Length: 257
Image (cartoon, rainbow, N blue to C red; front, side):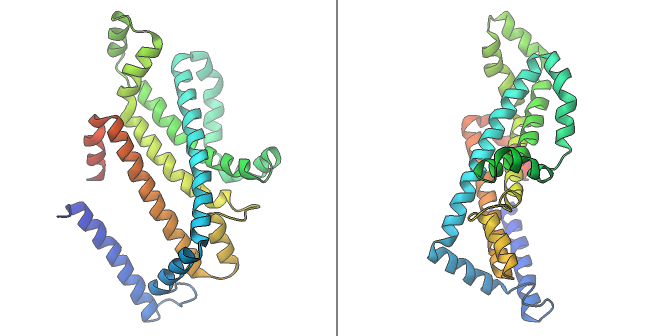
């Protein structure tokens, strides 16, 4: 039997779908601006059968995957350095806060000059979009670790690396998980902007190209695919976290309630 939250989600989607169908069926919104659900579904099926959808999806998945993993690695490394070095915090804190306020897309011209117009530039935009939520989540989690636990670890003769791995990271996981999930969502938000320039494949390119061709059905199809993959990626991330840290299952369930 479906849980109440699943029933609520199904009801919400069904309501939106019904309103969408009614708006198209009764002419509340022109078919050019909002094609009927059946037209969008037909377009999705046609693109899937031709292999076009799979090609664009795989390209975008690769870009998001590489960008997200790089952002996680950089955020974890820098957060640990910040926790260990007051000098590093004093030197870089204001600079990072300044960069956090700058939208990644505003840096696109510079990234094009520095990284070219190939894959590096696109991955760079995704890294910038993902980095700060993950970094702030991990930094905040580390800052909230009970100092008494660290003292106990030192008394027990644990090295700095063991204290980090066995005490600090597990204690800060709830905040880290929030940053990881937000960062993953931001990676898909940045995808369309990353694929605006000099792209010949990708879901973002598919949407922008369809806009230029006035194919609203393809635009909507691309949006739905991005949303579906984003939800699936978030679910897989949560499952991986629960498998690695079973004690966080309650936190994740509470966040969904």
